[in-house]
Amino acid sequence: MLTKEQNELLTRTGRGTPMGDLMRRYWIPVLLSHEVPMPDCPPVQVRILGEDLVAFRDSWGRVGLLDEHCSHRGTSLFYGRNEECGLRCIYHGWKYDVEGNVLDTPAEPGGSTFRDRVKHPAYPTHEAAGLVFAYMGPEEKQPVFPSYIWAALPAAHINVTKSIQDCNYLQGVEGECDSTHLTFLHRFFNEHDPRRPQPEHPVREYTIEETDFGLRLVAVREPEPERSYVRVSSIVLPTYCWIPGSTKSVHTYTPIDDEHSWRINLNYQVEAPFDENGRSLQEPWFGPDFRKLRNKDNHYLVDRERQKTENFTGLGPNFVIHDSMATESMGTLFDRSREHLGVSDKAVIAMRRYLIDVVHAFQRGAEPPGLVFTEADNVHTHVDTFAQIIDGRDWRSAYPHLTRTRHAMRAPVGV
Picture 1 (cartoon, helix red, strand yellow):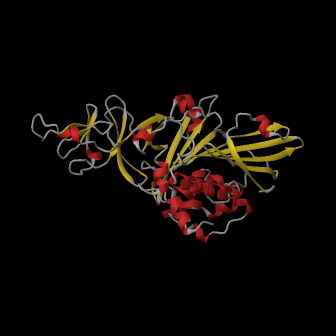
Picture 2: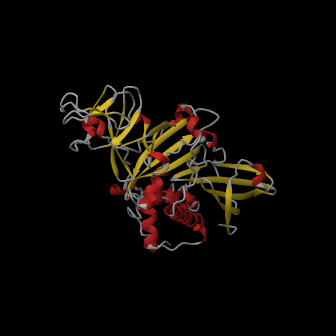
Picture 3: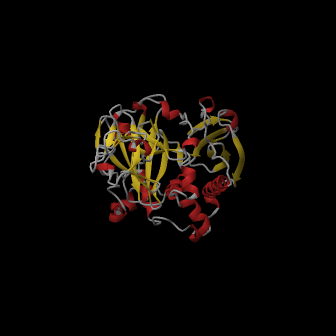
């Protein structure tokens, strides 16, 4: 368990908090690209890390992310006019570009230089993989955008969705570290199990490695003599969780505030594009506001008969809903001093300890791990996730690209 002080340290993400300031040093996803689909389209409200912002795509196609409230008198720029490469406030006509420069203050006298002395809060953005990312930290500390493998894939190789989670971001990240829940929360009793079949053999080796990007979790089973089933997932700072499956996935938990978060699922295929079946869902899971139709207010529409005969939860096959039932029902911000952890919680414990160490080092003045500031250093081929069967027992030799580790913590066999 965590002390109340440690829990506060990890879960509070507003500006000026240690974890909040740490997260702001990374590029984080803040909205889907199709939410601002074309130049001069309507702006959208964005709440991230407790800050109220507005996003817009200007006439040149650039995405701006501004403080929602006009620097003049505080009117919401969400209601502004997106026109001629700027967002114009409806109240007095002040106009801003994507960098927060004041382009026009029409009520001021002719020749006034007042606008040159005002800079509206704005954050740099970067588009990749159907997402708009933002850097919300100090300007002089801005890193280059990381060259993850999915960042350069064509749009047809990417399938990205998002939904609101009515809980703190950490509850979602912890779920991604918790492999034990796969056996229960996502269990099906019939042939409708949507997952790729997984070996049921006990874990022979479970290794948690600290790396330059975060943590690497490696589970090794022995499906038959002298063969190994190797499952690799990665927790990449600040809140990216790389998960293997029928397609590779990156699940990201971006704090909206301390009691809500965005779960962004980025599925990608390197070799081939998605077909229509890969992009479609079996039923409408989310509303136009990205809220789940099955949610805590309607008890996720749990079907108790289905729970007896079809799957462990009594829900449909969408794992986001399963996960939400587990993490949201803990409460919006769980008090971890109340829990009782066992051996199977090894990865959760390691992830929390790692984050605490990183935040403490950051408070002492250390640079956050994994940031790169030149394109020459922008190589991330060692960040990966997969589940494969190999000959032999030596998975390290089979995957030489899994490098840059610092130290390893081994869990007992059978975890």
